[in-house]
Amino acid sequence: MTPETIKIACSNCNLRELCMPVGLNPSELERIDEIVATRRKVKRRETLFHNGERFTSLFAIRTGVFKTRVTTEDGRDQVTGFQMAGEIIGLDGIVNDRHTCDAVALEDAEVCVMPFERIEELSREVTALQRHVHQIMSREIVREHGVMLLLGSMRAEERLAAFLLNLVQRLHARGFSASELVLRMTREEIGSYLGLKLETVSRTLSKFVDDGIAEVQQRHVRIVDPDALRRLVNSPAC
Amino acid sequence: MTPETIKIACSNCNLRELCMPVGLNPSELERIDEIVATRRKVKRRETLFHNGERFTSLFAIRTGVFKTRVTTEDGRDQVTGFQMAGEIIGLDGIVNDRHTCDAVALEDAEVCVMPFERIEELSREVTALQRHVHQIMSREIVREHGVMLLLGSMRAEERLAAFLLNLVQRLHARGFSASELVLRMTREEIGSYLGLKLETVSRTLSKFVDDGIAEVQQRHVRIVDPDALRRLVNSPAC
DNA sequence: CGCCGCATTGACGTTCGTCAAGTCTAGTGG
DNA sequence: CCACTAGACTTGACGAACGTCAATGCGGCG
Image (cartoon, rainbow over all chains, first blue to last red; front, side, top):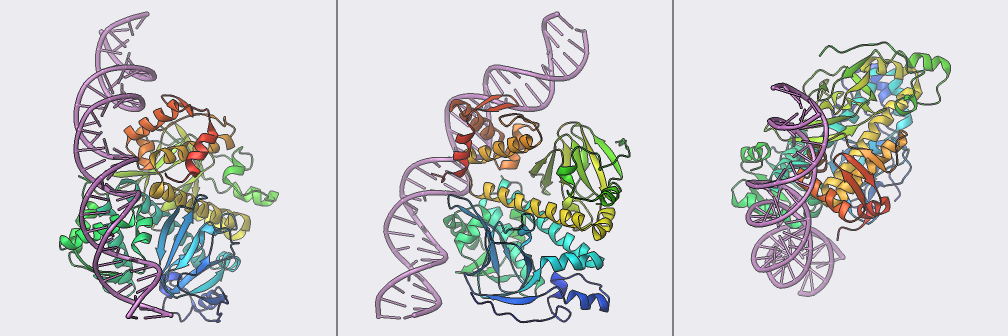
């Protein structure tokens, strides 16, 4: 509730190439540092922002994993994504000046707070930043197209295979193993994201184990046969 | 194949308030006119752009309805949206300089071609335009969140109810009837968008007719009891 | 040590997909 | 002008995939 705030610079942040544009000259780099107003720590299960809250800033994740979810009046909710280090959240708030989803930390996390007014100001002057902002938003749109494809036309096995491949690929890009991962989310949260019930997620994971595709111990997953997963994702639904 | 091109101005376009920012001063308005390079006509079933094509421009729809769709290697495809007058398409292309989906005209259509470089240039100078571009992209992200909720947690009836309400609301905002509409897409296209098979779409429409919620004659739909549709969308899935 | 949340597994039910037959409509050509 | 055709739509019977409900297991934390 009382966010710890520390003033720090992007220019020597090791996540810079993940969340900031590359190829800036020194004077531009200096200006970029102005973007991050503060940092903020978020504890497991706490929300970074929630539906209806006034939008002021985008957030760059430094550590930890978040989920975003939308909710209907009658209490159903849908996980719309899982975000990790270097990724930007809060884009949903721009259009109406209010957030339209919740962002919940799945483990203790820390984010950089980037006031959107400052981003807009600076991106009028630094074209690389302007381009970068556009790309981040476009990337999110393309990602969601992929999720729509998954939800609209894949069966449970394919959905879970795509999910695991995507997760492990993003972790690998951050220096983690290309075959092992620790799920930061529950079966229910995975199910919500994939449009499945938690029992179906559990059963499908068990099937992967039976088929020798993966090893699963609670939240620890080892992908034994990544090609089999890839084949699942790309094969006609038969 | 040979796009007709005509040079025309936004400043006196009757769709301006739909696709351009409001509250510009005269000199800004004049500059905005520079954005639209040309117009382009697209015949029914022809594509405005397609997956893999180099991205250069966004398109503002003047007349006609489009669908956008993504495709997998094995030939499955998913309709990701239906777009109509005043809406902007092509945002998916920004991130990788290539389009990642196809845009197909469902009826003869005309669009304004807006070279993205020009948009970026101008939005560095006209802050209302910068803000507008951000809002358009954010709005698309929020829309897709809604589709994910629909695909991930609604049953067939709810999906179709939400779809019809959304369509009629957008048409109403454009001066058409609030209760009658002509579907420009086939049952199969609706099904693809909603993650259903065409038979299910057809059956569910028939059920709406039986229940006195709507009248359906091929592509002509009259919503008799919009509240019943709203109740369907917002009711717990029981 | 015991509790609680999370996960697994089984039995059964529902919804939607599949397959197939048949209808309607608009467009085409004689 | 009308017969013909192709594509879109409807409807039924059946089956598969996934959801629901319930019992049980497991592990981490106080």
